[in-house]
Amino acid sequence: MSVLVFFGLNIIGDPVYMLVSPDADQEDIDRVIRNLGLDRPILEQYVLFVKGALQGDLGNSFIFGESALGLISRHMGATLELAFTALFLAIAIGIPLGLYAGLYPNRMSSRVIMTSSILGFSLPTFWVGLMMILIFSVQLGWLPSTGRGDTATFLGITSSIFTLNGLSHLILPAANLALLKVSLVIRLTRAGTREGMQQDYIKFARAKGLSTTRVVGVHLLKNILIPIVTVLGLEFGSLIAFSVVTETIFAWPGMGRLLIESILQLDRPVVVAYLMIIVALFVVINLLVDVVYSILDPRVRLKEQGK
Image (cartoon, rainbow, N blue to C red):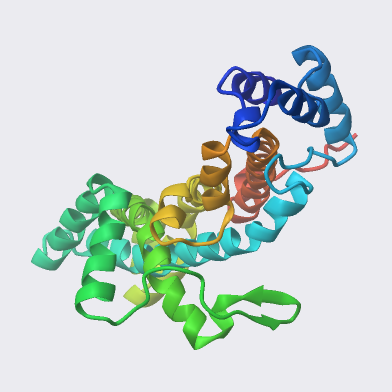
């Protein structure tokens, strides 16, 4: 990934002309090139980048003149806050609606739920975001349309969810980011419910006289959570990586918005550092998903082999 990103960015545009004045002479341009280390062969630049990355240094921003890793870290909290809130909404809304649609597939309300989930897959994120701003901010005036709002610190965590002003700023971007995931969870839960209700263990639980609430809440839900957790774990990585559109529309000060600004200004170190961090996050998330999967499904747990 580092090879693809590093060499790919170095063949697109020249950041020097974004940093110098249009009136600068060739001597000034050459000085900037030397200061940025762009006068060295591309292979040497890559080797220096790898050596620095192994020591936790992903380079310095061309625009801000500070560590790219530190710059991204300051924006990471806002992105993680947005992603976790969107994930919570996907679970809190998607699983109950999916269960209802799976348990009562022939009801009109279930058909409305499934139709709405198709819309959630089909509507472009940027269009939905603009419509949310138009309706809830411009016409109704209920919610703010841009920014993160006030933040507060609780148990060492700084977040906007700890203030009413911050929550009001978080609702629209989180709902916009969660829309696709809500639709995905609804369809996964419904499919798992329809399949699970036909299984022998559900029929046996009903034959023992257990209530529907216990059958669904204890026996059915635990089993259908296995594929849902697996998919949501991977989708959480995409929430972080692809929150660019939502953060741009709502002017949310996260990593995605920083990435767009860095691309427009050809700030290569920041773009490379962002993509490498995202790669590392996906690796960690995949590991955590495997661990949680083994907890939920006893069949895949590793057991010590007797000698």
